[in-house]
Image (cartoon, rainbow, N blue to C red; front, top):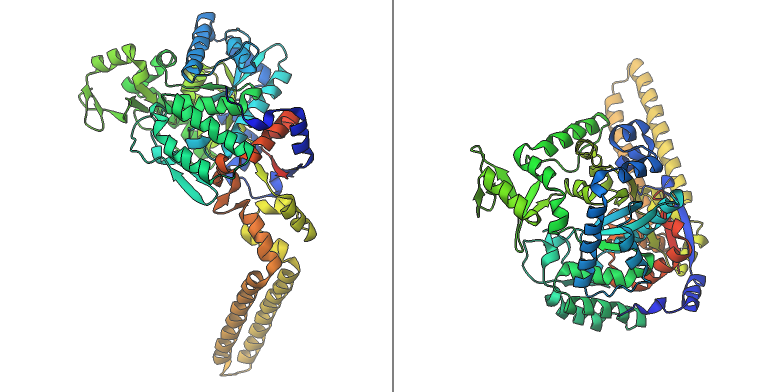
Length: 553
C-alpha cells in the first residue's frame, strides 16, 4: 500500500514542528466572517428558533434512542462501507483505526461527526484539508464529553453532484490543469482513468521533492486502479488521513437510499419537505436573513450514470424528467422508487436530511456559507423524526512564511490585520500619514463651515457678491478634497513598505482571494503535512472557528 512519505517517523515530525510556529487570532477582531455568521454566533433567539440548542448529551440520547439505528441497519451500514473500501482497493488491516471505526458503527452506542464536500481532482482547494481535520478534531471533542460512546469522524463525498465545472480543475503554481471531458451526470460515477495525462503533466511540473512526488504517486495509483472517481477519491483521502481515523462514505448507494424512501415519496407526491422548509425560511426572514437556497415543489433529481435530471409533477399527476426523456405515472414512479431508490438523488436542501437519516450523526462541520442553508432544515428534520445535529463551522488555517511574519513584525502589524478590509489595512499600515490626511479633512470641514458663516454675515449686511464667492468656495473645497484623495492614493502606490505588506495580505486574504479557497492541495503538499502533524500534537487547534489559525514555517 502506498503511503505518503513524511509520516515515516517521529523525528521527521518533531523537526518539522520545531521549525514552525502557530498563532491564534480572534476572528471578532477581523472582517473574516460575514454578517450572517456573526449574527448566528451572537443572536440566542435566532439559534433557539432555527438550531438545535440541546446539550451534546441530550442530542446523543435522542439519536441512540432512534429505532432507525437498530442493530440490523447498523450492520448494513458497516457492510456497505466495507464494500466501498474494497472497491477502492483499500486493504483495511485489523489494527487500522479506520477499520476499528467502521466496525464500531455496528455498536448501538456509536455516534458520528460528519463533514462533506464535493469531490475534486487532486482533492481540490486546501480548505478540504481544514474540513477533514476539523471533523476529526470535533469527533475527539465529542468523545471527551461522552466517554461511554464511540465517536467516528465521517467524510461524506458529494458524489451525486453534477456540477462538473466546479470540480474539474486544479491550479499548480500558476498553471491550471483541467479534466477535459464532458459530463452532466454524477461526478462520482466518472471513470478517472482519463485524468492520468493530467497527473503526468503535474508530475513534470511539480517541485521534485519526496513529499510532492509521493502525493502524485497516490493520485496516479488511485486514478489508474479505481473504476470510479468516488472510489479513487476515497483511496486518496485514506492514504493522506488514515491516522486520523476518518471514514469516507459514498451516499450514492441503493441500501442507503432505501432508508430515505419515505421522504422522497413525500417530496414527489405531496411536496411536504418544501412546505416545511418554506416555513423555516419565513422564520429566517424575521431575523433579517435571506435563504441562500429556495425550494422547488420537488427537491429530488432522477439519477443515471450520465445525467442528473430534475423531476416535475404535471397537472395530470404524471411526472416529467425536465430533459423530456421520460414521463411516469404516479404508480410507475413509486414502483421505480421501491425497486431502484439509488436512481433518486436529493438536491442540496434534502442532502443534509438524507445524511441525518442514515447516520447516527451528532455534529456536522459546515463551511461558513453552508451553515446558512442548514438554518432552513430544522422543521423538515423534526417532522420526519430525524435528529438535527449540532453545527460547527470548520476551522480556517492559513500559512504565512516566517520571512513575511518578520516583515509584519518589523512594521508593528499584527496578524489579525491580514483579515480586515483593504481600506482598513491601508489605515493601519499608513496610520501616521492617514492621521495627517484625516487632520486635513477635519480642517476642510472647519474651513467650509467658517466661510459659510462669513458669507451669511456678508449677505445680511447687503453684499451682492456672496453667491459668486460661495461658488468659488465650493470649487476650492472640491479641489482640496480631490487633492486629498490623490495624496492618499499616491502614498499607497509609492510607499514600498506598504506595497510589500499589501502583497503579504493579498496572498492570504482579501476581497478576491482567500488562500485556503484559491490555493489547491496539490500546490500545498508541505503545508498539508504540516497541518496533519500539528493536528496530531494539538487537535484542539481545529475545533473553534472563532479562532483563525496562522501557521508560520
